[in-house]
Image (cartoon, rainbow, N blue to C red):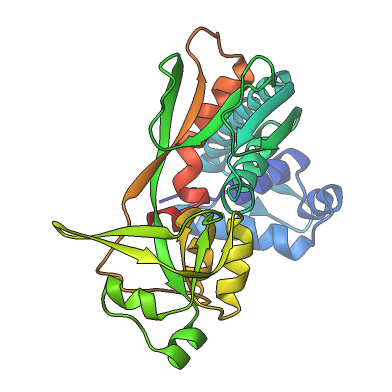
Length: 302
C-alpha cells in the first residue's frame, strides 16, 4: 500500500496539537478535511490511531508507534528536500548556447525552461545561428549541432535522432490529391528550404530502395518557421524536420506525405571543445538534455 504522505503529515500535526480544530486553524484548512484524512489513514492501515472523547484526544498504543515512525519519516523527507534546494541554490551563473535556426520553439526552449525550474539561479543566453561558432571568440559554452562533425577537436554527445518529414495540410491534399510515389511530387506545389541558386533534389528511401527526385519549387526560403506557416496554410508540400513539424503532425494540422518513402535520419548532438574543462552548469545542462529530451520533445520520434 502506498502511503498518503499528506494524511500522515496531518496525523502527526493532530497528534502534536492534540486537537483537530487547532490543527485545521494553524494549517488554514477545514476541520472536516483534517478529520476525513486522518480517519481515512486509520481505515487504510486497519488500526485505530486516535481515541476521542468530548474533552480529550489521545493516541492509542499503535497510534503512538505509528506517530513516532511518521514523525521520523517526514523529518527525513523535509531534510532531503531542503538539501536538494540548497544544492540547487548553489548552482548559479550564465550558460551560453549556440542553436541552429528552427529549434528554439519546439525543442530548446522546453529544455531550457525545465532546466531553469530545476536550477532557478542560472541565466541562459541563446545564439541562433546557422554557422559553426568559434567557442572562444563567440564565448559559447555548448553548441547544438546537426549531423556529423567535421571538426575533430570537438567532443559530441548525441542527444537524439530525428528525421525530416514530407508534410502537407489535409486541405491541400484533399484539393490536389495525395502523391503515391516520389516522382508524383513534380506535379505538386513544392516549398523548399534554400534553393536560392539551384533546384533542390530529394533522396527518399523505401527499405533498400533509394529514389532521387528533382523538385521545382514554387516557393523557396531559408526559414523553416516560414515554411511551416505556408504548409499549414495549405500552400503545398514541404520537407520539414520533425523537431519543427512534429507537434503539427501529432495534432492533425499536418499529415505525412508518401510515408513509405522516408528521408534519412540525422543526429542532434551537444558539442563542446575537447580541451575545455566543462563548468558545473554546462555539465549539468548537457546531462539534463540527455536525460529529458525524449520526454520534453515526444514528437522527435515521429
